[in-house]
Amino acid sequence: MTAFQVNRPVAAFALALSLACAQTGNKSSETTTTRTDTARVAKAPPDSNITRADLARIQGSPTAPLWVIEVSDFQCPYCKQWHDQTYNAFINQYVKTGKVRLAYVNFPLGIHAHAFPAAEAAMCAGVQNKFWPMHDSLFASQGRWESSADPQATFDSLARATGVDMARWRDCVQSGKMKPLIQADHDRASQAGVGATPSFMIGDQLLTGAQPLSDMQRVIDSALVKGKKTSP
Image (cartoon, rainbow, N blue to C red; front, side):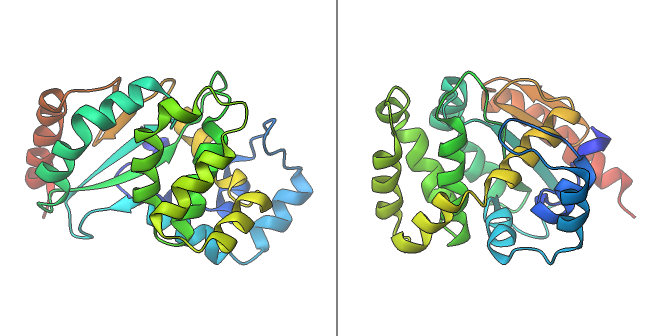
């Protein structure tokens, strides 16, 4: 768990392109970075679009004492199950009350053909601070696009409904600029011990599966109590 530093915000996880590529050094079919490229990227100034997208998938009070990291795949049926059955109650009980900050980390599985482009659609919406509306729409419409030969028309429709500037959103998607960030999400979550979706990092605990709120409550409440005992 220490590899992912779950007590720090997503922006500090080195998920942004410049730092993530430099620190992970991982290669994949989606983003292959040579050592020379890594060194060059690490010295380059951070892309403001990537920084905005990174921060946009965080919700909750900056003073919340506990982070919950949701590691998820937009095409995963169990991720949709958790979203449909637990997400809203979790948000109302813990995020809106200032107890927890929630961060979404992308973990597109290779068995899901459209998981990676769905993540791109969401992160590009995040550039315009529309990550969470797009997140909700992708899960709500999963049955429409998961078996589609080309889901892009559906993603376009969902993005338009969130109110994004479509020209900017399409430019972001077509440029592929979110690919390294999404791959860095996947790689660093994997390094932290994640192997399935959805998974939840809560304090020093890793929960896997579409957890009911009652099971999450025990871990979250325990972490909150532990945090109070260790705080100065």
